[in-house]
Length: 318
Ligand code: FAD
Image 1 (tube, rainbow, N blue to C red):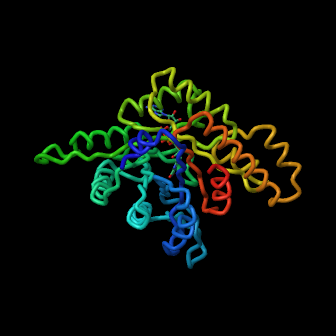
Image 2 (cartoon, rainbow, N blue to C red):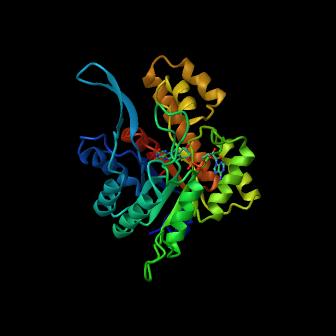
Image 3 (cartoon, rainbow, N blue to C red):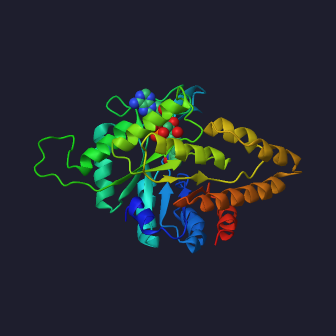
């Protein structure tokens, strides 16, 4: 079922969904089921699986030189999605990037997803690779998520790259896109970023999942601002708890978001990470409850593999 239909059919209670990472290369799928089995108690209607393109690393050769090599540490997004769908009978949403794909590779991967019965895709641009200063698309790839949304939407209309296909089937993907309540870090300003978001929706985006935020006011404003420029699709809030003191620095620098003064002040009073985790859980529960009151369609938790913490938060909501 499409994410948008799931949301439309569930007006009474707030749903919860989860984002998980594929296992590190060499690990078995058990590392995923260990995370998901306990979360099934919360009846997530869909689960997102992140996509991790290759990264550059310097590795030492036998001769002692260092050479730049491309490594993919977490392959398997599509395989994990298929496994989730068939093991749990829950919709799996693969994250799909512009980065690393030509248009043709994108088309072929979309055909695979269709064959696997995967109906939902979160269409993203992706970031610059480690050791690269800015995002570089493949020579025949997409520079922005907008272009990827357009390609998926074209296939939904039966338009493939090859014009000679006879009666090509129309795919039927529901397309999610990313939104940034505190602005994407590359955008010139918040308003410009919103206009680009609107372009993604106008091109066929069906729903938005937000970047994580720790101050609900940012989300409430974002929803209002989206409405005011004519974005009328569901906006799913993505949240996670802080669990370590070091995240006061690492989260803002990795995700380009702010941490509220009160949260930072309280975290600094904690004597160790265990106390920070308790604070983070309490903060996230309060955030979740306020979002439920606001009437969000679904709470989307970035699990980062920490099933115990996320379970504790979800238990407080039932
Ligand atoms: P875009 O929408 O293309 O925007 C990128 C930048 O370009 C923005 O600053 C925007 O304002 C600007 N822009 C957009 N359109 C135009 C245009 N036409 N002309 C000029 N500028 C434009 N990354 C991963 O690698 N794997 C994942 O699984 C993953 N999952 C994510 C899930 C969520 C919910 C979110 C919020 C992010 C996720 N990311 C993931 C990170 C994401 O790839 C990065 O934030 C990336 O830098 C931007 O992706 P985007 O799809 O928002 O890009």
